[in-house]
Image (cartoon, rainbow, N blue to C red; front, side, top):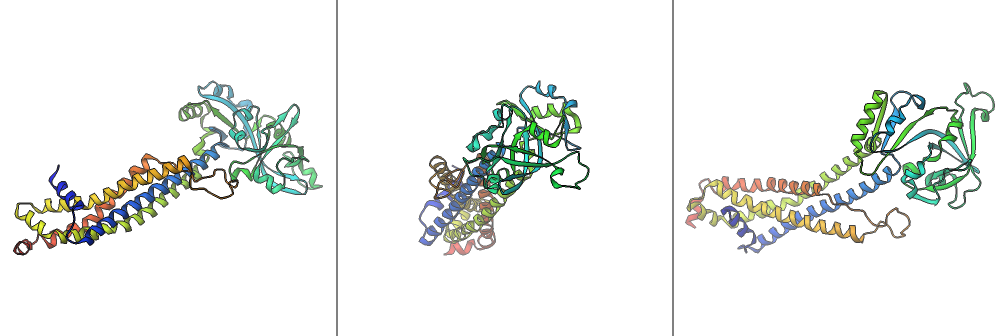
Length: 416
């Protein structure tokens, strides 16, 4: 064993001449442990919520989305759809038309985003897993159906399980140059029954209504135009590789976005929130670690005779300072590792058994218990942060050894 480490370890676990020093040392380890444990638990819960939110959003967003860089629509007659279908990993390409519309149900009305989707959407969309009433059915024979978000249903006072009468949809006529005359003549309208209600995330639930793309083309008086194309990839496909191939084929006239790019602002906000929480908890950890300064200062005073003996045996300033630096670091390391272990265990228990619930009624939330996810990278960052803070807090009292005890006072200690 390295000599300074051996002495430092003995100083940490041995009984001191004053019991208060043992008590303060224990408090120092406890403070670092609690601070580290708090970091592990809070970041793990944040990771859990982050994954939950992103999984809900990704269930509505496609793997890849193609839009025109200039203009509002893509003309399918000139679009190389067949070339894209031949790319390995592309499972299906769904044309989409999105437009703001007015939806009316009985005496209620609400502005929504009508999303017309092409044939096959029901088979590839994860929205089917979030249907809370009815079913994901957009067409049956010649009859069109609408699937609406739970927020839209709430605004319209449309009761789950009772989808009669059908809803009325109004969109401005594309070919009308002016809006003079009766208001009804300025809009195309359609009556469409509701087949189901989905609940994914508030942003989507209160905004979107899914309908067949044919209905949207009729209402908007489109021929070959679409707003975008949504691409579903086969399981295990390399998203980045497929995205680059599509960009190479389409050129600069089209934008091809993956799920991260479709919700880039949300991703950045969630990362910023995580770092903000991390630094707030680090600040609390710094305050808790200040106990190490007091503990180490009192230990140095308690071991002043030992310092004199080591000096007389030939130990230089560097060796003596290293002993007490390691002593302080052992406190931080002990507290940090203990905090990581306890925090990891609590997170694992919550993940397995969910003993901390989100609410008491059991039906108000998508999940019942707080979600947690422990990331190895977070544990590494936490441990490195604890070690850095520990080293900084150890630096001051160890620096005082050189000033007070190794600068002409050794003879005083030896005479006592």
